[in-house]
Image 1 (cartoon, rainbow, N blue to C red):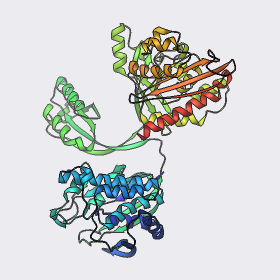
Image 2 (image 1 turned 90 degrees about the vertical axis):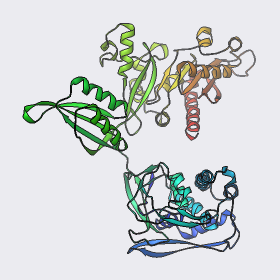
Image 3 (image 1 turned 180 degrees about the vertical axis):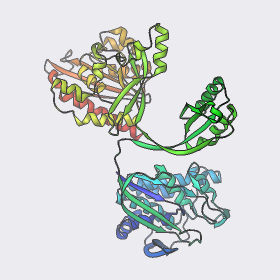
Length: 576
C-alpha cells in the first residue's frame, strides 16, 4: 500500500499541494496533458514550476498563469465540467469530492443550498487547476492512503471577494472542524479554503505519522514567505509496513491514596469507567510512615485526560496525580453474536494482522446471565475445558468452528481456497454478523461459509428445510410460498434471508435453498440436477442468485460459485 504523509506544520494551500506532489516525481507534462481534458477555454491558463527557497529550505513553486480573470462559476457548473470531462474516473471522483466538501462549507457560511453556491476565488481557473491537479497527481503516484499532520490555525485578516475577513476564513473554519490544530505559527492565512477542502476530503488519518518505508520526499512552496517558519508543505511517500499488530497512544494516570475507604475507591472506579476510561486498576503500595496504601491507575485517550482527572480528584481523597504518555500494542478485536446451546451469546474475537481468528471467548456478562437463569455453575459454561458450543449443521458444535485449514488437513483435502481468506478479510473489515439459514441441499455451501475464520457467521436453525413448515414460518416464509416452494426456490430463499436476519437481529441474512430437478416439467435438466438459490438481505435490499449443477458439482464447483457471489455482494456493501 502506498502511503502519503503531508506535513502541514506551516499550512496548506492548493498550489502548495500540487507543488509538493510534483516534487515527488509527477511529470509536469503529464499534469498539463490531463488538465487539458477538462475542457476549459483554450488559452485560459498556463502552468509552470520553478525552484525557490523559503527560509533557506529548497522547495518547488507551482504557478498558474490565468488569462481569464472574470469567469466565476457555480458549484453545479464545476461539478458538471469535471463529470463530463475525459479525465479518469478516479480523478473525477477525487476532484468532485473535494469540491463537494468546499461547496457544503460555503453553503453553510452563506445560508444557501449547495447547488446555489457561487464561487469567487475558488471558482477561478487557478483554483480549479489546483484541485483537479491534486487529484491527477495522487492518481499518478498511486496513493492508497493519506495521513495529515495538525494544521496551523493562523490569525489576522485576509482580503477576499467578500471583503476583509478574519483568519481562518469562514469557509476554512467550517472545513477544519474536527481536525487537529496547533497554534505554533504566527499571524497570516496559513490554511486556505482550497487546502482545507483537500485535507478534509482525502485524508484518512491525522496527527500520527504512519509506519512506512519512506521512498520519496517532496516540498511545495507557498506564495508568501513568513518570518516565523519556512512556508512549505512537505510530502512523504512510502510503502506501508506490515505489522503483526498496531499501536495507539494513551495517557497513564496514577495517584497514591492512603486515606480513602474501599467503598469510595470502588465507586471512583465505576465513575471513571462510565466516563470513558479504558481501564482502571489498583495496586498495593507502601507509603510514608509505613502506611499501607493503594495506587489508583487508569488509562485514557489523551483528549479525555482533563475530565477523568477531575473525577479522580473529586471522588477520592487524592490531592494530586501524575500522568504520562504511553503506547499500547493491540491485536484487532470484534464482538460476534452467535446462537449456542444456551441461546444467543456474544463472543469476543481476536485477530492477527492477516485477519485470521486467533481466539474467540464468550463474554463474561452473557455467561453470568446464563448461569443465573439456568442455575448452573459459571465454570460449566465458560471453562476452557468445556468451551461454549456454537450451533451448526446436524448439531456439530465447536468442531465445525475450527479454521478451515485445520479441518481440511484432517480430511486430507489439501490447501485452502484463497477465496476463503478474501471473505474472512471482508467479514472482518465490515464487522458484520451473518445469520445463515440453509436447506439440506445447500449444506456443503453453508458449512463452507461458517467455517471461514472471522466470518462471525452462525446458524439460526440447523438444517432448515422447506418441508419443515414450522421452522420456515418462524423465518417469515408465507404459507402461499410454502405451497409452491419447488417452483419458486428463489422466492423462498429471499423470504428466508429476510426472516433469518430479523429473528437473529443480525447485520446480514443469508439463505441457501435447493431443489432437485426435473420439477414438474418446469426445468429441462437431467434427473439429479440440483438448482441452488442464494439470497442475501441487509435490511435495505435483498439480492438473489441462482445456478445449477449435478449433485457432485454442488460439493465442488457450485460451492465456489456461491462463495464468489457472496464476495461480490460483500464488496458492494463495503462500497456503500
